[in-house]
Image: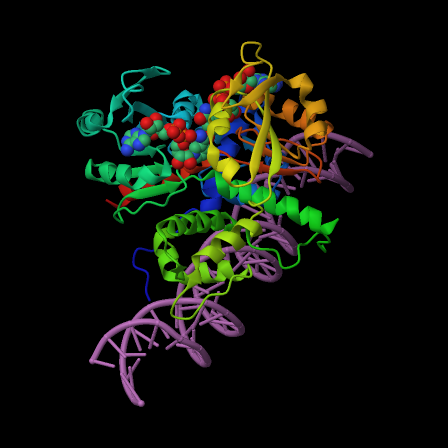
Length: 217
Length: 217
DNA sequence: AAGTAATAGAGAAATTTTTCTTTAATAAAA
DNA sequence: TTTTATTAAAGAAAAATTTCTCTATTACTT
Ligand SMILES: NC(=O)c1ccc[n+]([C@@H]2O[C@H](COP(=O)([O-])OP(=O)(O)OC[C@H]3O[C@@H](n4cnc5c(N)ncnc54)[C@H](O)[C@@H]3O)[C@@H](O)[C@H]2O)c1
Ligand SMILES: NC(=O)c1ccc[n+]([C@@H]2O[C@H](COP(=O)([O-])OP(=O)(O)OC[C@H]3O[C@@H](n4cnc5c(N)ncnc54)[C@H](O)[C@@H]3O)[C@@H](O)[C@H]2O)c1
């Protein structure tokens, strides 16, 4: 079967996953005043192969200097742009519980181009409060505010059993991308982007490695 | 170069990443009283190819029935065991800030075999408090408590710039695996398992897809 | 009872991602 | 100045992962 929606020359997802770490590393070096950084250094920091770094960076317009490496400033600038971190996108967060609050406190999101404009909940005791200067509204106000503030992303941090309900509302209300932190998989139309972020995958990997170690003993 | 530490017949990491979702789905079905589930159903829920599910499950000892599927109960039991979720591992969490508190509130970790026995911080105003029944100690007490409680995992939720310091302490204190939630990459001896869990990779992927959509318009 | 459709499972093929190899450039050392 | 070592970059090869193809099985429909 021919895949019509096939991406042409898409950047590999693993590459995109690594890039924010390159960026964060480069930002750190910049603060320390370092001008150049080699793929070897980055690879050493990341615990990966140096050619992997070179290949990853080759997807951007960054060019390195033989025997010197890449200009730190260039990495920061180009990578920020490339990753979409240098323009602000507006998001709404639904579920101002423990994880939601943590995200609202995380300045890294803001630094990397995501502005959480407002939070929503159904719990009367949370509504009206401000968490790190972000106000918590009743979920019924989502639609009007989303249009008003040009919000394209919705963050789901409600209990798993309510994830689908919230997702449906988000879609109906014009959200283009959903960042789902619950372990539940949500069903949305094809044109809506969904990113599932589940802790338990990571837990499974750690356990797997731990047990492998045990087996080898 | 010959790779001596090469794993024999290891389960692919992507497979392990998907398994917790299969498990969660099966648990949901079990609660609803469903007895069997087919790879098609699971695939539909996960938005992936059915043969992927079949292949993933083939790494375990689960066997399916033609035209019927897999027994839900078997998936739950075998997968829990396989993923190491049915035996409790003890962990310590260092950095009882916003993310740390959220993790301490997350019952899912407990459900999937991770018991956070204690939390540690250096902030006097946090020390002595209890978060969801887990006590926050001064970091100096880590060592003694780790030995006493047979803790093998350390969870790092301090600010990124302190991640390496905390990791060094954890290693010195006999921790076998580190779950690092900071964007910083830590350097540890080869025999220590490290799992980095960084939000910003996910953010980068969403932005990438969003921008791709924009480009295609 | 016969036919049909859905499914597990095994193996092959295709695709994606990582690693290796080679080349050219050039900074630093001799 | 010459040599050496380090590096980026491009392309090839290898490895890992996903998707496809085929077969056998069997529940359900006719
Ligand atoms: N706490 C964590 O560290 C953590 C980590 C990873 C994933 N998760 C997942 O994130 C989700 C939320 O976890 P949590 O610990 O923050 O739970 P929580 O109970 O602390 O917060 C959930 C919030 O959602 C609100 N809510 C419920 N239904 C809603 C609805 N229909 N519309 C709007 N708001 C609604 C609740 O009032 C509550 O404030 C869960 O699925 C959990 O598995 C949590
Ligand atoms: N908040 C989030 O939602 C979120 C999400 C993803 C990742 N992160 C990352 O997690 C880390 C923590 O974020 P946070 O928002 O919880 O920060 P935070 O400031 O709320 O919490 C950090 C805690 O660590 C403690 N601490 C600092 N140095 C310490 C040390 N040496 N030993 C022990 N404790 C120490 C502080 O006292 C504080 O309580 C950061 O690296 C952040 O990038 C946070």
